[in-house]
Image 1 (cartoon, rainbow, N blue to C red):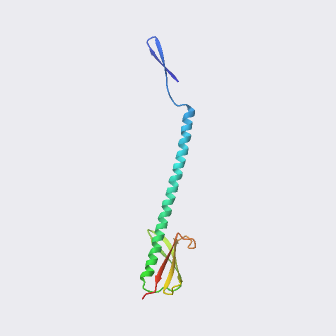
Image 2 (tube, rainbow, N blue to C red; image 1 turned 30 degrees about the vertical axis):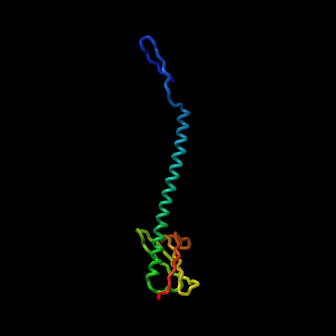
Image 3 (cartoon, rainbow, N blue to C red; image 1 turned 90 degrees about the horizontal axis):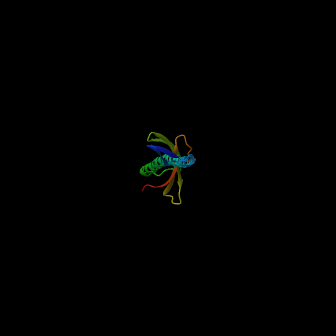
Length: 135
């Protein structure tokens, strides 16, 4: 591009620099690709943050159940128990399967935790704990 400036009887032409349509289109294409990648990463981060929050809360519930059994000062009977609990305004369900071990004075606890509307057969977390026979 050129621009013309008149100085008296003379016309002075100057070359103006600018972007061509092709350069602008390439820049927009690169920007679109980068923005798409950024949106995907942000979405992935948000999903992972929610998953980690659920996993952490479920782990705390399982640990609380294990501590309850350890503090009862009684030897748990072999079998399974299920129940519900609320933590941070979310309803959860849990299952404790008590089984024997090679040591007759020790019981194994398999504690599964899922959201209340979830499936305990595919829990968010499972914790294994052991309870000894009181002396």
